[in-house]
Image (cartoon, rainbow, N blue to C red; front, top):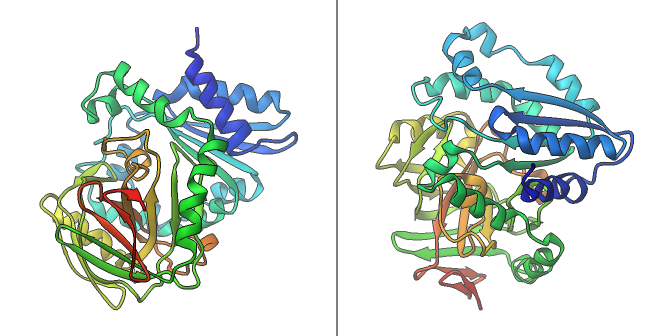
Length: 353
């Protein structure tokens, strides 16, 4: 018998997040660990009169690709995938990792090379209706230091919400931030300012990420000044980077350090010119998520946190920074952190004044 929480999650993804309609092409990307949700999504897509195209990734595929692929293969642009992307109307991506550290031993330069080649495909997909979901698996539960049962409760408590009501709650913060031009973040070993003049805040209320619950924009490319110490580890391509500290001048990183995997951090910010700049400023507003679990889809939504992404900016925010990188890093403001907007204190200790 299918867990009713899985059925509810599928209904949210198909009928709320992406609003699948009759006659549309819907690409469902999933991993082997997320088959239960993928099947429920598949059923609903068919019932809605749409045409599902499913891709299931098997454990080890990514590892073997990067282990054996030649430079010729890594630099080959996937024309077939681009054709599918252009014709598709909706993308539903359901993660369900069996091994969160599968790519740990892979040379990050190979992955960076491939990410750069795939950049046009990424931007084409962003033009479509899309949503991401992190399905609870043993591997993710282990990463979060929970039993699978505990982690399932954690996931569904964060995702199976009335997103129309959540959207109304988020609108208050959206209105506050949309009136300002300059943001300043102040906390322990953190004093960072940047401009948001002319940029647009987007309310992420369940239409793209699941869980959701944030507002975000794109900082003005050359405006970041100061320094920031991030609070939680960040996982990128299966490798954990912890203790990240960045210093900015004229919008670019001038110093980057980390307590763990500093070489990976430096490699990624050297990917291209855009990877040295901020592409996103986000504010976590999902207060049902109370702790980090080393999964960015959850961690960046924690109520009382902010996150900054290095690399590509979202065009819908009027962002213009281009990069093969988009890497989120999180700052917890729940214990003494402050957000100033045009010099006025608007948030303290993770709560809005």
